[in-house]
Length: 134
Image 1 (cartoon, rainbow, N blue to C red):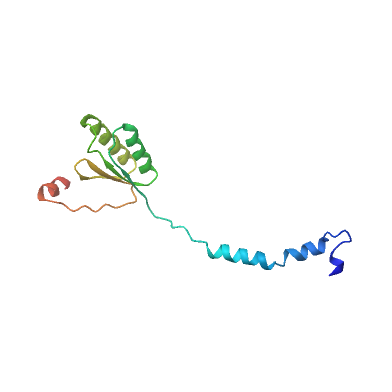
Image 2: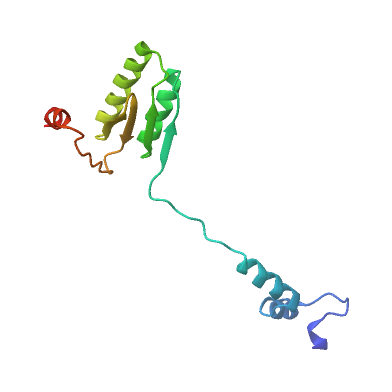
């Protein structure tokens, strides 16, 4: 191995090439400990955004952008003033229609907006609701 080093004390090209294919013990320990601590990240199929107490039209616009990205939206318009509430509902129903999605009222002034690739199964609460949906 004496011929692998040059007289100046620096490793020669053969020694560097040989060093590429060998590992120091310390380096191997670092590699094994870092690979043991690796945790894979969860990948979710869908995302739900809960929009609580929308007071401004910009918040409804954010819900529309989320729906366009394919995220499910739960929009709470309970505390919104009635005039703005109707404008937001009209706007969001237009966005849902353009995206071929679904908009369901799940409570008093609480809406579920879903993209076209999500199925929403609704069961009628009473006969009046059943007649209205047919």
